[in-house]
Image (tube, rainbow, N blue to C red; front, side):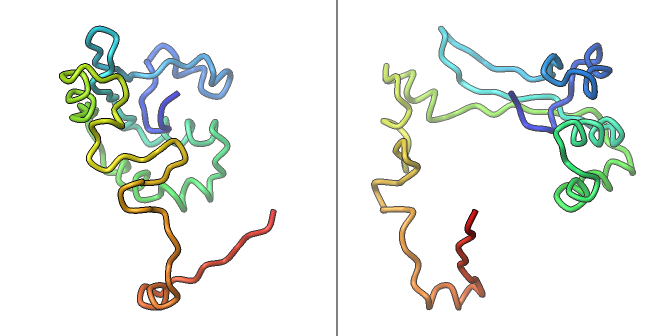
Length: 142
């Protein structure tokens, strides 16, 4: 699984609408002794292919335009094939220390519940803070 902007391998482009689960992407990982140091991908740069991929992921044309219109519009002016890789400094530090859990070396780690034990985030927000930022909290009932 990868994000919806990863380019598919050329030979799998015809499967996007037919069998999305069989499409292999142009993404990669840097592994050292079974330990992931970083990952990246080649991004889609073709607006037609990007639109097809978003449609296959159940984005309506309106939703795709609302969420990713800036990108689809930019593609109309041309984009070269591009990509990147990001190395995880925390992962490298853990490897150098012989530690298997990167939470032991992350400066501001989150626990498995997504909370930060160092600063108590997420925490309650005061009404004054919400007013300053022109925000309103609403609970949506499902």
